[in-house]
Length: 132
Image 1 (cartoon, rainbow, N blue to C red):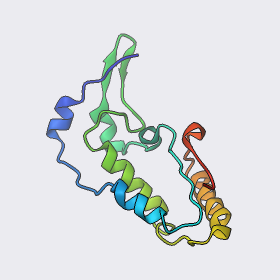
Image 2: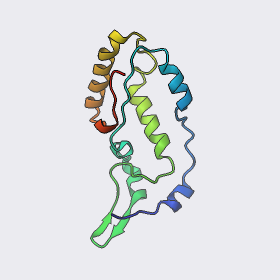
Image 3: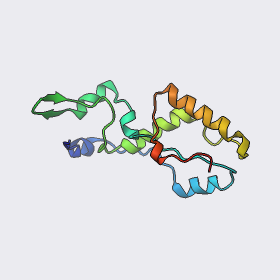
Image 4: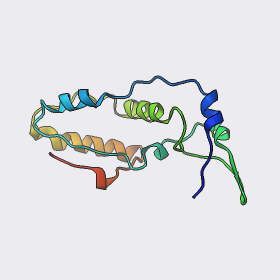
Protein backbone atom coordinates (compact mmCIF):
# COMPACT_ATOMS: atom_id res chain seq x y z
CA UNK A 1 0.00 0.00 0.00
CA UNK A 2 1.28 3.46 -0.84
CA UNK A 3 0.00 6.99 -0.73
CA UNK A 4 0.28 9.62 -3.48
CA UNK A 5 0.15 13.19 -2.19
CA UNK A 6 -2.14 15.27 -4.42
CA UNK A 7 -2.22 18.36 -2.19
CA UNK A 8 -0.24 20.52 -4.65
CA UNK A 9 -2.30 19.30 -7.63
CA UNK A 10 -5.52 19.94 -5.71
CA UNK A 11 -4.36 23.46 -4.76
CA UNK A 12 -3.69 24.24 -8.42
CA UNK A 13 -6.97 22.81 -9.68
CA UNK A 14 -10.02 25.06 -9.99
CA UNK A 15 -13.05 23.79 -8.06
CA UNK A 16 -15.52 21.92 -10.26
CA UNK A 17 -18.95 22.98 -9.01
CA UNK A 18 -20.91 20.28 -10.81
CA UNK A 19 -23.88 19.69 -8.50
CA UNK A 20 -23.99 16.52 -6.46
CA UNK A 21 -27.44 15.10 -5.66
CA UNK A 22 -29.04 16.12 -2.39
CA UNK A 23 -29.90 13.00 -0.38
CA UNK A 24 -33.11 14.51 1.03
CA UNK A 25 -34.43 15.15 -2.50
CA UNK A 26 -33.52 11.60 -3.56
CA UNK A 27 -35.33 10.14 -0.55
CA UNK A 28 -38.41 12.31 -1.16
CA UNK A 29 -38.51 11.24 -4.82
CA UNK A 30 -38.44 7.53 -3.95
CA UNK A 31 -41.49 7.90 -1.68
CA UNK A 32 -43.80 8.14 -4.72
CA UNK A 33 -42.67 4.80 -6.19
CA UNK A 34 -44.02 1.32 -5.58
CA UNK A 35 -40.51 -0.19 -5.78
CA UNK A 36 -36.94 0.99 -5.98
CA UNK A 37 -33.48 -0.49 -6.26
CA UNK A 38 -30.29 0.90 -4.79
CA UNK A 39 -27.02 0.33 -6.63
CA UNK A 40 -23.47 1.26 -5.76
CA UNK A 41 -20.70 1.54 -8.34
CA UNK A 42 -17.80 -0.77 -7.47
CA UNK A 43 -14.84 1.54 -6.70
CA UNK A 44 -16.72 4.12 -8.74
CA UNK A 45 -13.95 6.67 -9.26
CA UNK A 46 -11.59 3.94 -10.43
CA UNK A 47 -13.95 3.14 -13.30
CA UNK A 48 -13.52 6.60 -14.83
CA UNK A 49 -10.62 6.73 -17.30
CA UNK A 50 -8.22 9.64 -17.04
CA UNK A 51 -8.03 11.97 -20.03
CA UNK A 52 -4.77 11.36 -21.88
CA UNK A 53 -3.57 14.91 -21.25
CA UNK A 54 -4.29 14.62 -17.50
CA UNK A 55 -2.47 11.34 -16.84
CA UNK A 56 0.86 13.17 -16.45
CA UNK A 57 -0.63 15.14 -13.55
CA UNK A 58 -1.02 11.92 -11.56
CA UNK A 59 2.60 10.80 -11.98
CA UNK A 60 4.27 9.21 -8.97
CA UNK A 61 7.64 7.56 -8.45
CA UNK A 62 8.37 4.29 -6.68
CA UNK A 63 11.50 2.21 -6.29
CA UNK A 64 10.34 0.25 -9.36
CA UNK A 65 9.91 3.29 -11.63
CA UNK A 66 7.67 6.22 -12.50
CA UNK A 67 3.99 5.59 -13.09
CA UNK A 68 0.75 7.48 -13.67
CA UNK A 69 -2.89 6.56 -13.21
CA UNK A 70 -4.95 5.40 -16.19
CA UNK A 71 -8.13 5.71 -14.14
CA UNK A 72 -9.20 8.43 -11.71
CA UNK A 73 -7.52 7.88 -8.35
CA UNK A 74 -9.04 8.69 -4.99
CA UNK A 75 -7.80 11.91 -3.43
CA UNK A 76 -8.34 14.29 -6.32
CA UNK A 77 -10.20 17.47 -5.43
CA UNK A 78 -12.79 17.12 -8.18
CA UNK A 79 -13.20 13.33 -8.17
CA UNK A 80 -16.76 13.47 -6.81
CA UNK A 81 -17.93 16.06 -9.32
CA UNK A 82 -16.19 14.24 -12.18
CA UNK A 83 -17.82 10.92 -11.23
CA UNK A 84 -21.25 12.55 -10.89
CA UNK A 85 -20.88 14.27 -14.28
CA UNK A 86 -19.94 10.94 -15.91
CA UNK A 87 -22.99 9.22 -14.42
CA UNK A 88 -25.31 12.02 -15.57
CA UNK A 89 -23.85 11.87 -19.09
CA UNK A 90 -24.18 8.09 -19.27
CA UNK A 91 -27.69 7.86 -17.77
CA UNK A 92 -29.24 11.25 -18.64
CA UNK A 93 -31.96 9.74 -20.81
CA UNK A 94 -33.02 7.38 -18.01
CA UNK A 95 -33.06 9.84 -15.12
CA UNK A 96 -36.46 10.93 -13.72
CA UNK A 97 -38.33 9.12 -16.50
CA UNK A 98 -39.07 5.82 -14.84
CA UNK A 99 -42.60 4.68 -14.13
CA UNK A 100 -43.94 4.98 -10.61
CA UNK A 101 -45.67 1.63 -11.05
CA UNK A 102 -43.92 -1.52 -9.84
CA UNK A 103 -44.54 -3.58 -12.97
CA UNK A 104 -42.09 -1.48 -15.01
CA UNK A 105 -39.31 -1.88 -12.47
CA UNK A 106 -37.76 -4.94 -14.13
CA UNK A 107 -37.84 -3.21 -17.53
CA UNK A 108 -36.03 -0.22 -16.05
CA UNK A 109 -33.44 -2.46 -14.37
CA UNK A 110 -32.81 -4.25 -17.67
CA UNK A 111 -32.17 -0.91 -19.41
CA UNK A 112 -29.81 0.10 -16.61
CA UNK A 113 -27.87 -3.19 -16.70
CA UNK A 114 -27.60 -2.98 -20.49
CA UNK A 115 -26.11 0.51 -20.16
CA UNK A 116 -23.70 -0.62 -17.43
CA UNK A 117 -22.56 -3.46 -19.68
CA UNK A 118 -22.20 -1.15 -22.70
CA UNK A 119 -19.81 1.13 -20.79
CA UNK A 120 -18.13 -1.72 -18.87
CA UNK A 121 -19.17 -0.34 -15.48
CA UNK A 122 -19.40 -2.63 -12.47
CA UNK A 123 -21.59 -2.58 -9.38
CA UNK A 124 -20.67 -3.64 -5.87
CA UNK A 125 -23.18 -6.47 -5.22
CA UNK A 126 -22.64 -6.27 -1.47
CA UNK A 127 -24.06 -2.73 -1.54
CA UNK A 128 -26.96 -3.30 -3.95
CA UNK A 129 -30.60 -3.88 -3.06
CA UNK A 130 -33.14 -4.70 -5.75
CA UNK A 131 -36.94 -4.41 -5.83
CA UNK A 132 -37.48 -2.95 -2.39
